Image (cartoon, rainbow, N blue to C red; front, side, top):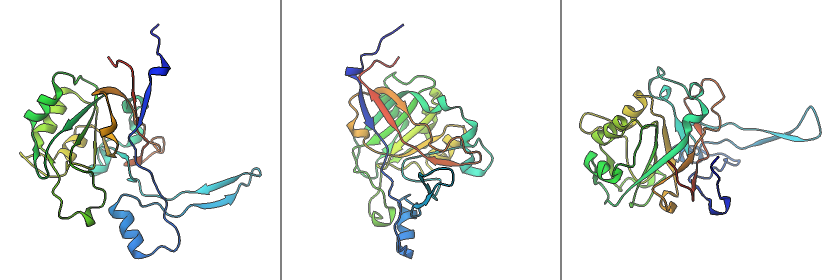
Length: 237
C-alpha cells in the first residue's frame, strides 16, 4: 500500500464565494444576481420542529458562482447531474494556462502544445489565461475575452477527457470552426465546471481535483453550485 505524506499536501480552493441577497431586494439587485450568477434569495431561519436547533430555507438558481453543468442543461435531452457517479467529478486534473491577449484565439495547436503529452483518457481539464478574470458581463462589455476555439474542444474530446473546467478569463460560448465548445462538450457528455477561480495559484500542472456538485443527489437538476478543491504535493499517475 502506497503512503501519503500529509505534511506535503497543499490544498487550493478553486471555487468562488456565494453571498445570498439581503432585503430589500430591488430590480437592480435581481439583475445583478442574474448577471453575476449569484442569484440566491435571502436565507430564512426558523426553529426546528423536532428539537431546539434552528434550520434555514435556501432558494437559489441552479447555476450559482462555481458550478457544474450537465448535458441536460443544453436541451433537456442529455444526462442530468444525478445520472453521473460521484467519481466522475474526482480525479486526475491537468491545468492548461495560456499566455494570451484579449480577443486572441486559443487554437487546437496551442492546446496540443500545452498538453505536451500529459493529458490522459479520463482526465479533468481546467483552462485559464493570463487575461484578468471577469464576472459581470454587463460592466465588462468593452472587454473581449480570449476565445476557446472549436477544434481545441474537439482535440480534448478526442483525448477522452471526462470534464472540462475554466475560469472567467476566456470565452467558450462562441461558434468557431463550426463548433461551439460549450455545446460540443455537453453533447458529448462532458460536464462543464464553470466560473473557477485561483487557477493561477496552482503550482503543479497535474494535480488531484475534487469537484462533486453539491446538489448532485437531487434528482432532476441541470446544474449545481460546486465547491472545487485541487490537491497538490503528490504525484498523480
